[in-house]
Image (cartoon, rainbow, N blue to C red):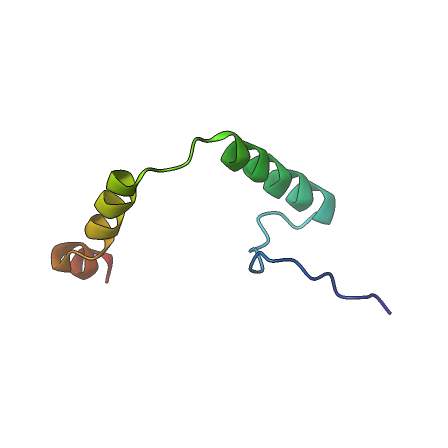
Length: 61
């Protein structure tokens, strides 16, 4: 029996059937995200506005 791993990240989808390849993929994503500069307040506001526009919601449906 395995012990569940607890992290502060939500469960991630399996990109590959091979668990080692899947782990390597997500480790690469983590490295890229960790290197990115933080967003400032204006950037966060623009992103939020883009996702909350009615036309964008209709197009996504």
